[in-house]
Image 1: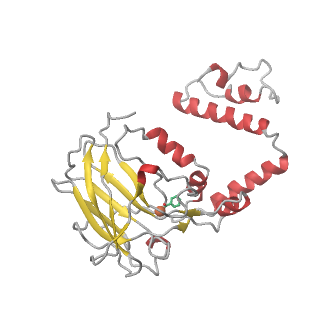
Image 2: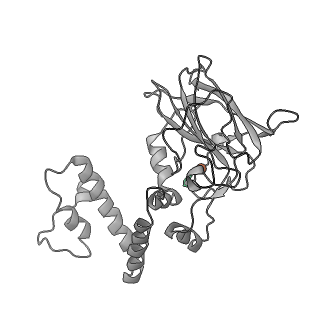
Image 3: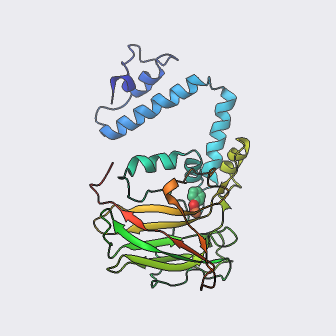
Length: 293
Ligand code: BEZ
Ligand code: FE
């Protein structure tokens, strides 16, 4: 912890507006885990400086407490409002970027989101993942490669998307079949994958809670551009959590969770006379643990 963060111990020990950071951080025990001490002292510093910089009024802070209370109260097993808050403030994407610095050419990460479900059945390459018969069919096809262009065998590709009405199966357990628009695929020696789903549609993140109200008061919409989620794991490689975005989507430049990266915008090409209406080709390039930027 830097001296500036911990500050000089105030001689009186009493709190003043001027010495607030140092007074609070001086209370930290001597045997506290060093990383915990560093993170908490820095958090206190920035929180206090934030309040100072905006001259936070009592009414504003009461509103803030009320907002955080409501954010906690709406959380359930299925609804994680704090993640939505982190996502819409750009914090999820920042933490993700800090922790996934990859060399050029490796596929970039993006936000995980709250709708992944562990345990989806493993399917055969080429299988259909859309189980409700709705939407415009799309072939998703490509390879999993390493940074030298070699195929990655045994990569586990977990995919999930919304249905044609913009909802994930877990948001509508009584309306959608279980595992609708989800699948897990394992690559063979050629590193190739393919499956049939639907061309995803843009959708609003859950906006009937405090985060939705926050977005509305900030003049922001709650929409995400259409995307297919991927989590690709292979032995000896960094885990890849990403999406491909539907090129041309009208929300690409205003994703409410800031998840879009240029390299993740994929072609979705209309197919004439094929077995699906659309086709999207995309190769995933995995980095090894020591391949960082
Ligand atoms: C999603 O893409 O599933 C998602 C990401 C962040 C917040 C809400 C949903
Ligand atoms: Fe999503």
